[in-house]
Image 1 (spheres, rainbow, N blue to C red):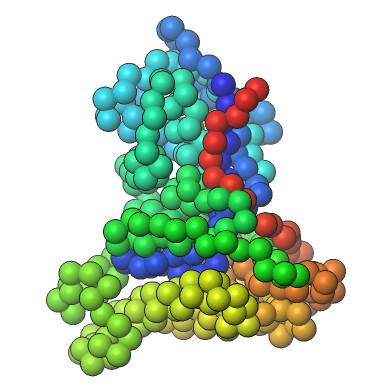
Image 2: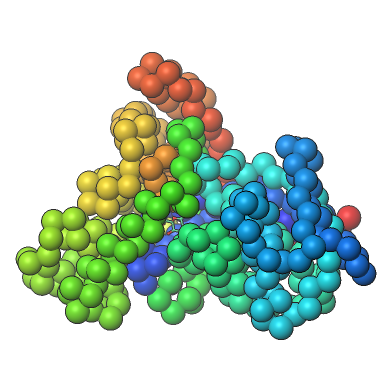
Length: 361
Ligand code: GLA
C-alpha cells in the first residue's frame, strides 16, 4: 500500500496559527510518498532509498538517538497506538521531493503520509482534522517542537487550485478558489536551512503566551490592532512587538482572504509585503538573506508581492508574479542574490496542489 502527502507554502498569516489566527496556505506540487506493508512479527523497518538510510526498531519507543526522520514516523504510529489502534510491525520505504529545512513543511508531509499509510494498513478512517491533530501531537511529543496546526492541516486538507483558509481558533476551514489569470506563485529558497527544533520557534511561542497573559486576554481574537494599541503601553518592548505582529497579521490574513475572493491581486500583493515587514521588524523571525530576496523580488516589474513564508530564520520566500515575466524575474533574482550573498537560490512555481491521499500501486 502507499500514500502521499504534499509540502505547503503559506501565502499569508505566519506565526498566528498558534495564536488563534487565520492562515492561508496552499499545498505545493512536491510530495512525500511512503510505500509499505504490515507484518505479523519482527521489527518496524523503514528505508530512505534516496539517502540509503535504514532504521529499524522492535517497538515504538522513542530515543533521542533515533534519526529525526524516524522520530516523525514512530511518533505518528505511537499516537495511533495511544489512540487505541493496534499497530502491527510494518516495513516501509519513503521518498520525497519536498525540500528539507526550507520552511515548506517536509516534516508535516512525512508525518501525514505516514498517518495516511497507517490508516490503510490498520483499516482506520480518521477525520481530516483528527489526522492533522494526531500528526501535530506526534511532532510535539516525539520531536519536541511546539508547532501550530497549519502545516499538518494543509498537508491533509488542501485542494487543487485553491487556497486553504483555516481559522485556527475554531478549526473551521474553507477552500478559496485560486487560479488567477496569468499569475502564479513563485517559491524561492534562500538555501539558509532552519530547524524548528533549535529552540527559536519555541522561544517565540513562549513570548506570545507571556504577552497574552500580561494583557489578560484569553485569545488573540479578543483584540484588534486598535484595541491592542490602547492596552499595550506597559508591555516590555519585545512583547509589544510580538503582539503588534499577531494582531496586525490576523487582520491582514482576513483582508487577504477577502482580496482572493474578490480577485484583487494587487491588494493581495501589498498585504504580502506588509506581512513580511511585520515578520522582519515586529516578530523578528526573518534573516538578512530572506530580506534581500524580498527586497530584490518586490522591486521587479511583474511582481505583485513577496514575503518570507513559514517559521523564518531561513527557508523560502513566496511571491505573487506575472507568469509572462517569470524567466526575467527568476534570472534577475538569481543574479542579484548571488552577487550579494554568493548563494544560488532554488526557485520553482507551483499551482495549489492536492492534499494527502492513498495511492494505488
Ligand atoms: C512552522 C510551524 C507552523 C507555523 C509556522 C509559522 O511551519 O510548524 O505551525 O507556526 O511555522 O507560521
